Length: 472
Image 1 (cartoon, rainbow, N blue to C red):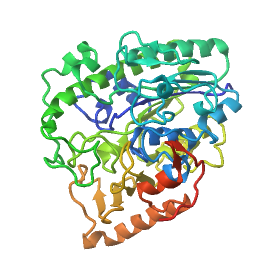
Image 2: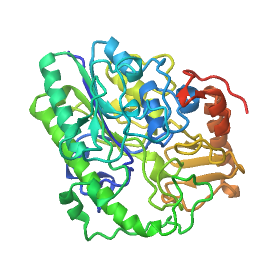
Image 3: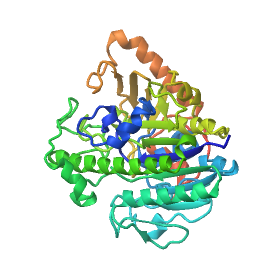
């Protein structure tokens, strides 16, 4: 039998709850909803470090942030001396392609459109994607002249029309090439939406029109005051909460466009006879708070931030079930490689959960969660660690040691902190001990953000590649 192919599509800032197949009646996601009816829905997929660059570093290396990637904030350059997802694929005869947002190369805060930050040159900094690389470090404007990508030179290649449409066109052309080429292939498509800015000019008008009269309800965990633990990205400036409904209209319009593009891509796989032998994944790097718990953006242990959609289809080979197995970012590489018949690098720190996916059976897998500082600037005071099971969330901040325990089955909006409930004392102890056991296994000593700046990073370039034992 021919080796299976892999198509891995991931959105940016799409939360679990904002798609129709997970129950959102406001979402316009008919293509994804139909796909979900015929594939496996990993209902408890969690972003282990819910920030753009940390997620991508873990996805590609199979390592936690504090266990080896060192991507403790955004806008750092990853150390290329890892054995990566793409390394294994390429060495095993796969033709590899990467299209879209990268966010692991720039070594400068801001200045996103300078080619010294947006262009990732061929070689080790592409982390094994040595064949086709139509990418850019990152930007959040989705029309030319700010929407562009690079191939193998610093020349900016501007998108025609809306960037997600352009990227999907590139992916379809690449799949057409792969079919003619004959080798097994792995294609990663990193789409920048529905990441902000949520302005009307940042989404096609025909999609925005779908939501022009929509008033989104305020969730039960919405708060009018900022979370005291929030960093500058998560705090609301005065008057900004009034904009949430307008932001959501653009956000949901972006999701509707995303849905159309995923539909186009999967339809092409089917029409070309590639779907039956292709493992197709649709997911996201993290979610968005939209005022829940007094926060916006991500980088926090609440489900609006960490819980992401994860659909996986492999022809008719997988059960069409809602699989409740907790599935962390660090588990993705070893699991998908195993499904392709390949061994993960020994350095990978996640679990191979392929048997759970192949059978649809629940597997206990408590997921370590982490936040190692602010989103893109250095600074102490917002660091946290957590653990997410199929039912419970346990988390603690380093500053002040404030701890949280939520029963997500009885309290899905996480409004009741049970940490001081005597009836939950044994549960809290068990989750706390498991969190620390996993932290100890990767050498995580729950350091202040400043520790990593002093010892792991030089001029915004990460120096480490393994779980070096750090001290307080």
